[in-house]
View 1 (cartoon, protein in one colour):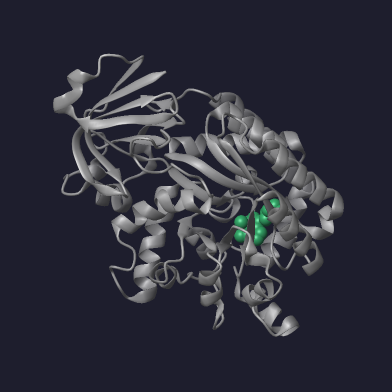
View 2 (cartoon, helix red, strand yellow):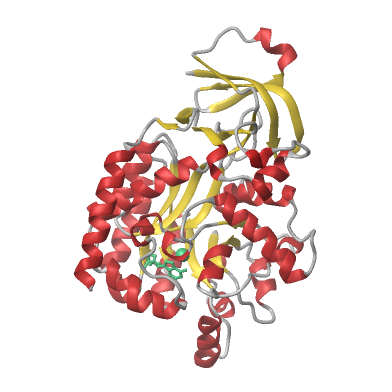
Length: 432
Ligand SMILES: CSC[C@H]1O[C@@H](n2cnc3c(O)ncnc32)[C@H](O)[C@@H]1O
Ligand SMILES: [Zn+2]
């Protein structure tokens, strides 16, 4: 399949300066050629033509930390601190959901992600085989990991999670990759974490974990072990693997050096951190120290959506506030953390740049339809600081169009809305 995208107003990619008046040729899963419209006559052979007049193109966004099926809990538990939120509301709800519920809750999240320009995500949740079915069907790219809470999952859960990671890696034409995912150092004991670490090493799997999210988590560790969660994990070499660490909000002296030394991949979740009042992560310090930072939405229940544009704007403005420095996260940095840094975080090669030889995961944004793109001084600024996700018009993943002119090509919206609504409300009724 060859797709020609012509008349592109501008292409943004973090490896190069903005390119104007271009075409892109996609062949099968790969970006084959990018050139000026003056040379379009060279391209005679294609199956599908997209006219990108008044559109900009950039890589799809990569959401590196989420629990997609938590769409089911949107608006169900708001305005609470993390520990009470989990223990009194979220875990009781999750104890009632089955794999079909997770399927439909995930499907709801996938619609939202596609419609807001996300082309890849990293999910830590339950019933990952059902999530994988949806990744296959939707056309999205995903790094999937069965979440492990020791007291609930134990050895059986570990076996299942490892089995999933080994059997589903590289499925869906390579769009699925896998990791292991112990929930957090406060829900998984040292022996359990060591077992996970050894399995990850043996099978060359990454590890996705929540880390240093709240002050309470850090204080509990300081009281119990006289060390921070970061130091605690480092002391038994947990960080020997590729580690995707969500949050990293609260650091003790020496922690940043440990993160840097171990090449920890930080998934920053500013809206969740704000909503649960956990604080503002020291992202500017991470970036200055060349620690790779990407962006996650976390689950919808602590956000309350999966919109990466909202997430990035919040990330940038919070860093400006925290450091009293308007340059703390500029638009070029936002582009990097939403795209190429996400690919690095998920250990995915040849992804997230608009460059020949790279995988064709990209989005077209309409810059003439909505008021917030006027005037056109700087379209990247308008996108990150002014626009809404509704400007995302067409989404391509692995060379396949999954939304065109805002029409979803792979998912049945009506059916998904119906099932997600029915199931979510039925579960909340069981709990009351
Ligand atoms: C083991 S699967 C994932 C597990 O994590 C819970 N969760 C969702 N958001 C957060 C968060 O911000 N901090 C800690 N844990 C979170 C989710 O409900 C699942 O139980
Ligand atoms: Zn999370």
